[in-house]
Image (cartoon, rainbow over the protein chains, first blue to last red):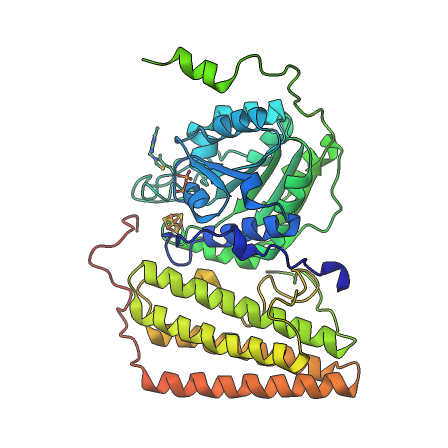
Length: 277
Length: 177
Ligand SMILES: Cc1ncc(C[n+]2csc(CCOP(=O)(O)OP(=O)(O)O)c2C)c(N)n1
Ligand code: SF4
């Protein structure tokens, strides 16, 4: 037990802001907030050295609830902003967070290229298979037969498989976590932050309002029983053949991480001057 | 979660047992406070107040443990892993059980289940205690949890039972049924 002792210097609570979340009571995103703050406490990274960048959606509210630097940006553009930030300020720990609508729909193209660039940041998607904020439309990860007033009989469209797409596109670390296991998710997020390159953590985070049946995920998820692999072919097999309920690290690779080759040639003040009216 | 994430670690010393208990009580304080905030944000004041009170009771337990062990208020506790058999600590009310229209009776029902789990946790430690010192300490904590169970039961007698349509909302957030 001693190896688990946590240094008392910074506690998870030190990474929470004074703003109280307005998520629906019971929303999985509370567990993700808990996991992110616990992960930062594990790493003992001071809040002013961390930036949390998001898009738009219920889940994308998360930066405001942390005491880190935050940027609640434009729908689907969180990864573009986060990538720019990390390249300009490599000293910061950059966490990009948002929903499945934000990241896989409108932001789907940014997702592919962020994996491919392999910039050293951590991307957390709080996946509830629905657009929560805009009241329950189907998202790319929604099951094709999910019946709702907005998609009677289901969309009939095959679901997006973010983990295998991330692997194919070049992400260096791929994991699945569960908001109802906030402590376990914290361990995974801490490992993702430590791992060099683009780390992708897909967190199953139930939307109790529009997908109340997702409360049952708690009964289905399980820790993956196999050790993590750095072999993409093995990881692909595992990801493609699991039932979507295995949580843990599914791939931890050593693909070359993006490194800025040239130093900046202009200062921010010079850049700003060009736009002065 | 199925199967259990970790097997519980059997405390070998009194210090280990009390660290587990401290972690468990702190988790309960944290969760009840979080639930109170959730309800406050949704203007469900009665339930928010109830959860605040529960957080206060659990804080008494924390203070009690710290005093008994002569530990400082910021005593470091074990991080997640190896302590509980489930993702949440035994005394924690699951977040997904919340409903914005829930009533004090529902909240007490969840609190009762949490106290029962805490009781069972210490009961298991009593039965598997590594030595007499640990057994006696675990018995003491089991007795405290039993007291809590009675307290919550008595409290439930005093609050109205919800009507069957307690969750009906004339202006519901979801229109997809
Ligand atoms: C450019 C643009 N298009 C559409 C929207 C409307 N919009 C807001 S949030 C959202 C989807 C949110 O879903 P998701 O990212 O899954 O987050 P959740 O609310 O489920 O956490 C959409 C389509 C917007 N704000 N901006
Ligand atoms: S609508 Fe769904 S995703 Fe949004 S806060 Fe409510 S439960 Fe969470």
